Structure formats: C-alpha cells, structure tokens
Length: 138
Image 1 (cartoon, one colour):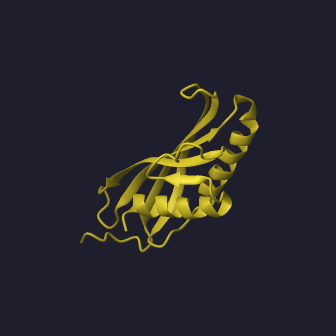
Image 2 (cartoon, rainbow, N blue to C red):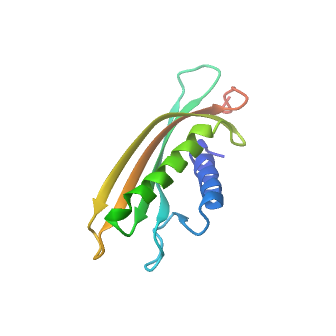
Image 3 (cartoon, rainbow, N blue to C red):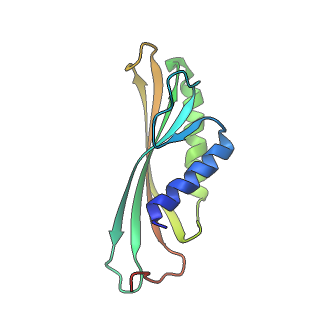
C-alpha cells in the first residue's frame, strides 16, 4: 500500500474510534451534520530516491475541524490537541515507520455559512520509510 493511503487509513480508523460519527473523508459531510466534525482533506506524498537502499517519503496531510460557534474555540482546540497527540504517538503502520516532522495549526473564524463557525486547519508533515528499510522497487 502507498504510504499516503496507509497513513490516511490509519488516521481514519483511529479518529473514528476516538470520535464516532464525527470523522469524514473523501467528501464533506452532508448538510445537517451535527457539529463539531472532523474532515480528512488533502494529502500529498513526495518520494525521496536519494538513498540507494531505501525510499523515504514525506507525506503531508490536512485535517479540518469545524464547530458551529466562534464561542466554542476551546472545543475545537481540544479536538486539535487530541489529533496532534495521536499523530505524535504514531510510530508504525503495517508497512511503514513514521515520524511526525511538523504540525501547523490555524484557528479561524469561518463566515462561509449563515451561522458563523470556528474552523481549525491542521497541516501535518510526516517522514516515512518502509519497515524493512529496503527499497521495494529493486
């Protein structure tokens, strides 16, 4: 499995255990979905072939959190903290070793709906390598 897909699968399963009925991927939740909710958004993977024996990957994952009131900043901030802690504890998935490299967090007021929302954007950067440490393309 591709590192990016293995990471998003791990995050989806882990976050759904922590936040049942609050986690969405592939599409935004339908109108009327209760707040708060989490959306696993864009992913990007960059393969580094600079090593003769292993392929290292940088995988970038964006996660959005929305709540239905700007007065509920603490709620989205606590959800963001739990998500960051989950990513910090990630060491291994089935095929890859992981290291969180950077986390960027922005908390924004979102006025794109008739009800003002509190919106958190988490930009996560991971470094991965195959568990065996050997290139699988050779």
